[in-house]
Image (spheres, rainbow, N blue to C red):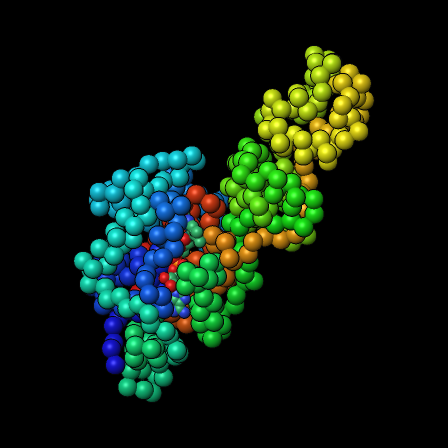
Length: 401
Ligand SMILES: Cc1cc2nc3c(=O)[nH]c(=O)nc-3n(C[C@H](O)[C@H](O)[C@H](O)COP(=O)(O)OP(=O)(O)OC[C@H]3O[C@@H](n4cnc5c(N)ncnc54)[C@H](O)[C@@H]3O)c2cc1C
């Protein structure tokens, strides 16, 4: 039986980071992954360029049942330390909007960097390894502490076991519920998981409008439950996506309507009443086409002012213009659902942080068992925040395993 000090189940962002951090401290570390390749999500991230961190990381960029939980790890391994690591490997990168950092070349550079760090520190990685069972050692046995694993590549024993199996999104990339099963096995509670950073779908008239306008991006402010994001909204064949919708999806609950301000830089009521004075003979759609695409204005006209489609502004009653302005400033859309884990970037909720040490990620009730990365109930906004959590939580555990 092989007996490394540390076994990490899951060779994704958090698992690999934890692996070399622990190995650099002199621990012998084995990473076991069920996929044929480690780090698959890193490779597909950020459209192939990996949005590996963000210049502006605050706890407010994360959703968690305990909003303070992430602070300690994010402070101890911050974005500047990751940027320094990236620079030390000569990886060229650039900033896009909102402080998001992406590789100039390819996400492959980030995975290659993690694997190089692992190799230099002596980490052993085994892929295509199916974990059949995990047991806490029997105090009366030959190895009285730690964890015993039965796997498709043989039995193992370790002192510390790190679960880094990620969330449920993109099952075709190796995602599994394994980490949650292990949490349950050891009596940890789970918070109900749902897909996050995911496009909205519709079954009402918006479905048809989205199909017609597919490919159109609009700068909007989108809100739900008192949270708003000013970003692009993208109409697609399946519904509404784009950064605004993805961000908002993490806060949306089934059955709720979302509000879309299509003119976030204008006071819509003042704009329309002003046009009534300055452009009395014009049609509303022609005036609005100076602010929004023609296709969208035509769709809005059918929904909100069909009776006045051919009426000059001067003839449209103020009350009607104010009603249209209300629709432009707070268009209420009711998604029928989301695209789910098939396309979601993350899984919301997961292992309840009340049962983990925020300093080490170790279970409070199960010594030697650690959870890191997305399997934990910490979910970042879109923009590099999820990887920063993976690096930081992996580092936190890597310091103690
Ligand atoms: C399309 C897409 C794009 C994204 N882009 C970005 C981005 O640009 N920036 C950003 O910050 N975040 C992005 N994310 C989110 C980010 O990829 C995740 O938050 C991050 O990868 C989580 O790291 P992790 O190590 O916890 O899990 P993962 O990286 O998912 O790694 C989990 C590992 O565990 C393995 N595993 C699973 N089950 C088992 C099992 N039973 N036995 C053994 N091994 C197992 C998997 O094969 C995998 O290697 C993106 C996500 C997706 C889906």
